Image (cartoon, rainbow, N blue to C red; front, side, top):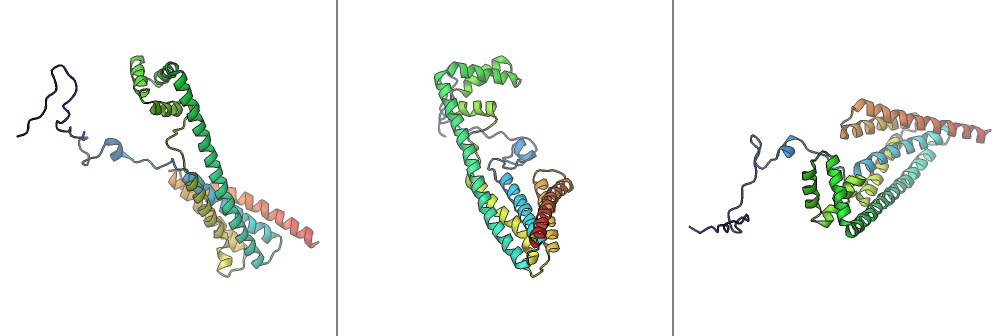
Amino acid sequence: MDDVASPRPGSSQPPSDGPERPAVQAPGLPHGSLPHDFDHRHADVSGGWLRAAAFGAMDGLVTNTSLLAGVGGAGLAANEIVMSGIAGLAAGAFSMALGEYASVSTANQQIDAEVRVERRAQKRHPVSEQTELVGTFVEMGMSEPTALAAAAEVHRDPEQAVTIHLTHELGVDPTEKPSPLVAGASSFVMFAIGAIIPLIPYLLGFESLAAGLAVGCGGLLLVGATTSHLTSQPLLRGAIRQLVFGLVAVGATYLVGHLIGVAVAG
């Protein structure tokens, strides 16, 4: 039987080649599960895709349904309505994707700038920054001795200290920035999907503006219900809200198109 090294008398260090401690296992849970993992799961909200996807789908639906209403109200023929819709789809999808990419990239660059500011502050005034963190922990409910110990522990790792300070001071985690590519791609795909929906009747051979608008409204209900499901909100309320927003835009655009069509024809 192999000997197991024992710690030196008076030393608190465990033997370097001793047996590993078994992982803590919560009673009554599957093997390897922790209470947090077993009890519930959180969705990944750090990548920025959900906001971009929901906005893209909603914008594609409202934009193209309104566009069809406008040109249809002006009296354009079915083939002209389809061409307008396809042009609106392409222009809107690229515009949304590039806009999202630029927006998220700019936000990430701003976070990076704040990281540099915090890093300089901790390098120049380490004691003041650590004292500031103690105050933050006390405000969170820690006792002062616990806050002092926690702040000292955090500041042993300079990068971890930067992250903790920014998380508490600005409400952002610089290690969990959203991806500009994911946001841009989500916007492009979802805008295109949303924008094609009101064109479906025309693409199937039904030259009916009413059918296109009806399908577009159905798409608004679907997008509203889907986003409500993803955010654990009442489905009906979300669906009706999206429909109402879309109808406002569609109605206004149809009225403008109709007035322009009447004026041009007159």
